[in-house]
Length: 414
Image 1 (cartoon, helix red, strand yellow):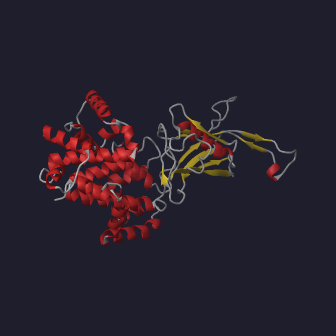
Image 2 (cartoon, helix red, strand yellow):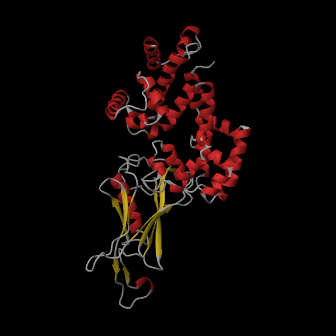
Image 3 (cartoon, rainbow, N blue to C red):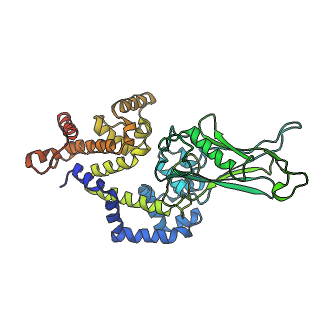
């Protein structure tokens, strides 16, 4: 039996090749081909739930294979979507449901409508939308990352104008200090600049809300062209509010070869434009699942390596059973029951934060060292017959100093 550390390294050292081999397996290739051929025909929740092969494929892609039977539950997840903070998916503790609702949103968007004045002498109420989540401290747009969404406003009963907002390395060039650490203020400024360069100039404004989320609001415009002008020179009067004034934010497909970044809007792309992302997720889930059949530690290691970039705090680890198991193994903590008090939870979160440098996971080399440390300790505690320390006595391999220390420490504490 190959030890956890060796198995993990064999898969992780060339992950694209490992995924390609998985994609070539007959069963996987057959299901992926079916998904890609039919997902474009799915236009509603009923369409997705009605095709068992498509539905099962999508559920596995998001790690929800064990919930495939619960169609009524998943219908609620899909129908309420993820645009509102109060939606069913966003109220669940497991963020896999939110991700699923975003991927299969079927064109859902969010819309706000202005209103007439409440009483004489008051201004009409503008239409405004605030993202359902706060912006992170920074975003990495230096590579293939992109946020893409459409901002649309109905100006009156017959006129609607829109602009597609795209935030990526190219559109942010020269506008941000560091593309790898784009701040919320820079994101808001870039969005506002794209609006100002569009037909919505002066009619919609964007900025940071007081709580740190991205917000949009309709504004009034008075553009007096030449007297009696027509066409481009015609006078333009647009009210900020009133029932004919709306503001809508819809999904927009990503540019080619881009990966979605969640800035509060624009990540809930329709299933047809998300087909490639879903098939890649399915391959990764299949790879991890097969590895787990032989060694749970390998699956945990691969899962942690995949999810590490989404970990912002110790609470993100505590909220995920698999991430918690990895962290507990590395720092020697026992598992906790779900009935922990808020005080106990806070203490545990602080302990994890003190023992694990979460920020270091952004460095691939440091993340790999952490995962290898986990794999070595897991071997020492669970796979004693094939623990990598035995290689020192058989001449079949060698361990770096940090990994060796982890194994020795684990054996002493076992």
